Image: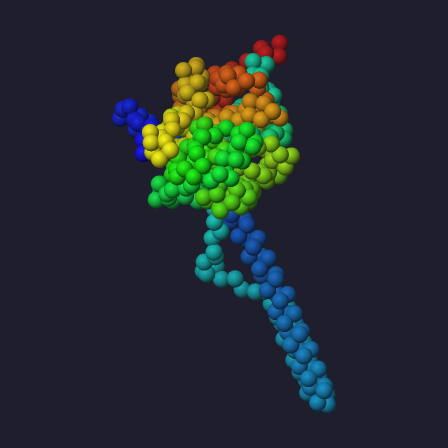
Length: 407
């Protein structure tokens, strides 16, 4: 199998390692907050368990006393009944008034850590300017979690093929390295579904055997619906079962109140919705997964050799290839585009400026694929050199620029 993944120099290897270190630092900052939340949840659970135990013990003694009393009354032993009930009342009173003892030395079961992604507006957050055509947009500084720029960032949208960021993330979380070279057969049902709905595709043939790795890259680079449905089927057995896993992931990320998915490819549906904010949060989760990040940041890839395609199929992430020579003040590292008539052109991207600051941008409602790219260029460029995490965070130049725009 041939695919493009080369390092040009030792410096590039060092840069990748530095990126991993930055991601780890950001994870640790978030975990400090989540650890406090988990401790509070554990305390609440202990209190609830203690109260429940008190009521349960009391209820058991009441039932036991009642049954014993009925039995002895049936035998005509009224004296025994009176004595037993007296003893039962004393025992019940003691159990109801004695607080249960919780041993702090006994280890409590640690709940699985759940990462909740969130960003926030600040006094420095600006409204996206007129040079950005997209109807809705958001730009997030990943280190601080600040929303630098936004327009309609909580409005409901159809995420179109940006959905596939979640598709790949969920798949990546359920795959082992050994499974990546496993084979999957592209069925006629898959190709017929793609043709019927006029969806983008890698264009594999019926009954063509491809690798799971091919399915991952095919889902993102050419936005292949055949790859996405194949991936969902491999992971969960059916697309419907996989979509349930997608919505479970959304709930885990804390986004279920504003996002819901009905398919894994981004096909329009009234109940398939999200926001540019939520898609940005999904993208952040994806770039923190090594496999998903690798797929989303690959510009070119050649699928494995098959009988139908002996040389494989060369596929590209055209957003990354088209934006790489534009002046963004840094580098756009990962991206996924989307289009349906109801959403127009949209995209989510992850990039860094020349100072190493990391950002995620998501836009929806642009007029063309190229215009969507230039919207991202304009947003990255606007904050070039204006984010400073040393003291006050964002520099005062941002507020000055916004004032000039309003004037």
